[in-house]
Amino acid sequence: MSTASSSPSVSGAKGSDGAAFENEVRRGERFEFGRNWASFLRTLDEGRIAEAEKSLREMLQLERLDGLRFLDAGSGSGLFSLAARRLGAEVVSFDYDPQSVACTTELKRRFFAEDPRWRIERGSILDGGFLASVGTFDVVYSWGVLHHTGRMWDAMQNASNLVRSSGRLFIAIYNDEGWKSRAWLRVKRLYCSGIVGRAIVTAAFVPLFTAVEVAKSIATGTNQFAAYRRSRGMSRYHDWIDWLGGYPFEVASVWRVQEFYESRGFSLENLRTTKRMGCNQFVFRRAAGA
Image (tube, rainbow, N blue to C red):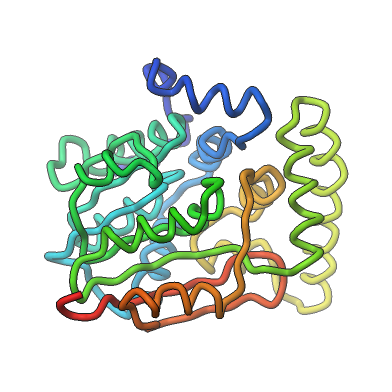
């Protein structure tokens, strides 16, 4: 299977159904995640795909996904849709960002062309009519997405509605750091305000982040960039851009997320927390018959 490094074509992805998205970007209300993911796909190789598969297996505590329906809600680059499909799941992917839809479509073209068990749609986790059309799933996966909708708690509720009885919900939500989170919100707004704001934020933070990672590498004797790739198969640089520009932006503490889902008939099965900026990862299990 080819892992060609060309960027995905987005022709046809900016039609009338993308007008609302483009208007939000133009007004500085939304970051273009898909543009960042198109760049990430140039770095995609078998090693990254294998690490994505490993992260799904470890968090879901399943070696394979054969016979399971898997929803990638906010598919981004499409990497984890691909990982789930390679693990045997029947996959439905969707994203609000037209370029993210194009990235996911490109990965399907490369690895599972014409496969009827992987369907890709454009839609929003906030659109009840759209969600009704996709059905319910054994695994609903939404990593680092729900806090970028502008209505995080509604998005979290909608995601839970898509989980079948005894199914799993695997989400990642930005950690609430109090005043630090409020400060990052201002940085993200500046990044999304236009070319000048984007240039200021990138010039200020990317060299700083790089210096910190180099210092950590020297201090620990471990290449921090390589270690990050091994964590989920992702790219440190592209995740920095995602972090700096990721707007809308909301946060929640571990206990608030856990309380929210446990009050809706879910139990926590797996948890990975962060002590700083970044995401807490949760796997919840819906009660049988719920």
